Image 1 (cartoon, protein in one colour):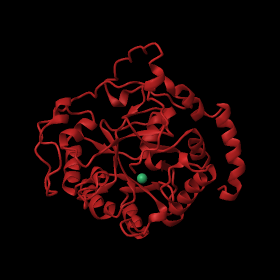
Image 2 (cartoon, rainbow, N blue to C red):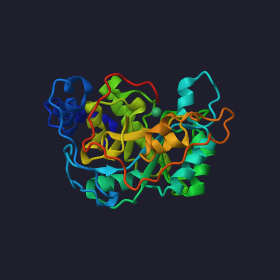
Image 3 (tube, helix red, strand yellow):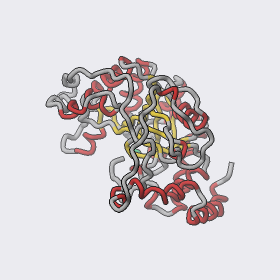
Length: 348
Ligand SMILES: [Zn+2]
């Protein structure tokens, strides 16, 4: 393994490639304005996308493609959670949005199970994207950011009830501090075979807004801490606040990560998206109907059902209208827009 001390030379080499457009991520960034709302106003309209595939397991693949693919990829919702708790401070609107009440979370897992969703891992996803490895008919990936203690006390017991797999992205500098997971808790969950722990930096810094040397440290030191404490190989990275750019992507590849996750919304994943996988943010105010809509399985009117919002006492979620069990997902663009955040979003 390369040591951190030897990396600055490689950083310079990689960044030179990024600047010259020879690195794939840089090339994709140059293509991105086609999908950006501003410049696209001056471009002719894109042709309509082809119809969606009939079944997930029959999707065309692009094995080995290194550049941004122009065809269909795999459709896998990667759900993004933070806290599983009743928000302790009502005026804290960001905290409320990031907090899923335990009863709501349990209801969401029940809903996934009842509708035939099967949890897969990021290894499963990357194998499907790269090599066309088969996936279940309704795959879903559950991710939890920041390594909060309630992942062990609230989320994990509910996941275990269903035998659901999950990935926790840990801020290694916070491990063991009040409100955060401990290494022993992580080892216990890892031993169950249901949970894998991946990197989310040491200090939760926004990597596109720090020096490249600092970004390099955050990427390498968090990976090494997890690998030494848990005895596993860390392969996936989650950008804090969804903040990244082409240079950060180059470092992610250089440091041995196989894929990285953003906060961009989306359900489809292509070979060219491995360093910027999209996710589905789950909000504290989501009803089951809205949760289903995130997964593409509810009609739009349910989004505005008057029963929306969590029960004020943190109890069972409010009743929702029936959710139709659609056999085919709705059409989506075949090309995931390539967007680097213009301004760093502040939500974790
Ligand atoms: Zn975070």
